[in-house]
Length: 505
Image 1: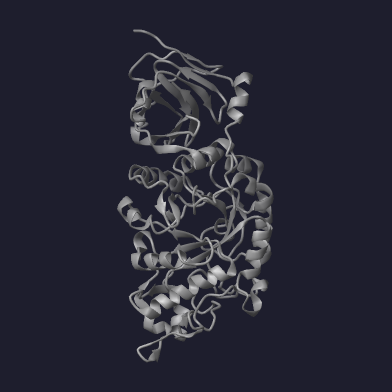
Image 2: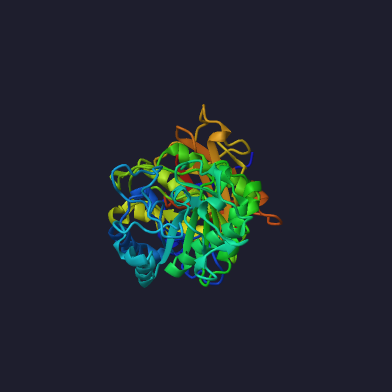
């Protein structure tokens, strides 16, 4: 049998300048079209749950501007319940603690957000965010609040500045609410609006015209997608956002039980949409994203046409660094529970799947390891500028086609691993804007595992392209790899990954 050589040796100094040149150039210049690239930023939820204050938010925004904006992280987003009073008895599904205006619209809690007093809303916050070179986002819920319905507030007609009238009468919250359709995970909080009614449309229009007037750049719309799909509300809100007087990204959340068919119904109406439930810092959450991201890529949904630009399947925030817990009344108080390997795996999958990247930790306490992961220039380059991103199914945990000869410094030869099924390994592939081939290996199993990709199978990922040889480097180890025949392979640690940046001919 003819042999071949696979070299995995220490990073060569002469190769360093090439690898370091892989960068995320021009990542903040996405003005050509809306969401031309997967959006990046920071979201308050993973660190603060719902209780974040104006001071805490602006402290994080300043650090995003100083440390992350240069890497394309340009949005800072206040997550849910910014209108809820932080008082005894209030929690994520409480009733009667929200601040609403005379028209039943949510207003920031003036105790937590003092600049919102006197009806200012988020205007002053948006101005401060914009002065930092950033863009401002808010989380909103589906439909209308239960509190507004109970108060039966009148509906604002923004074309007249007065109460909405039709058929000789004034319309109120109870007229437009679909009370049997309440948000599944916040049953006391919100319910759907009847968008077949002129008054229902007027209410939704009054919300988004207000957000635009505040200076909002992104709305994260919750409880309208996945198992709570409300295509009527999404469609009408998309229409309203397409007409407001400023660019305003439209995001959907969450995406429990989302499917490609469901995604195709909304992708042209929005700019990003969650395709799974909330992602927290546990391995099971990370692992659950492999199949759904594969399916979205196979359906050609990555970077599909969206609202005034493109749309992106969203794998959720990056729960790294200093965090809180889900739906609690506490701020950040603990470190991320994912191992360093698991965090690298999550960031690598998010990059290869071209997911929006929203950092979730408290930026005031970001550690060096976390910072290096979320600002890794190769991953950011892949996330914005790669193409043909998809699962690469031609990997195995055993070398089956040829004898392997390896050069490894102080490493034992790869051995077959018992107890590891093919379902426990995964791989993604993509091409770079300079012709690079990005090849990622993922070990989803509970033991260190060798993963192989035969060089001849790389051609199967690219129609009309025959690959004869490759050389390049593995990102995390810095090791050099070259092959003319045989396989690209490496041992991958528990829940870990390998990412090869290859020049192939």
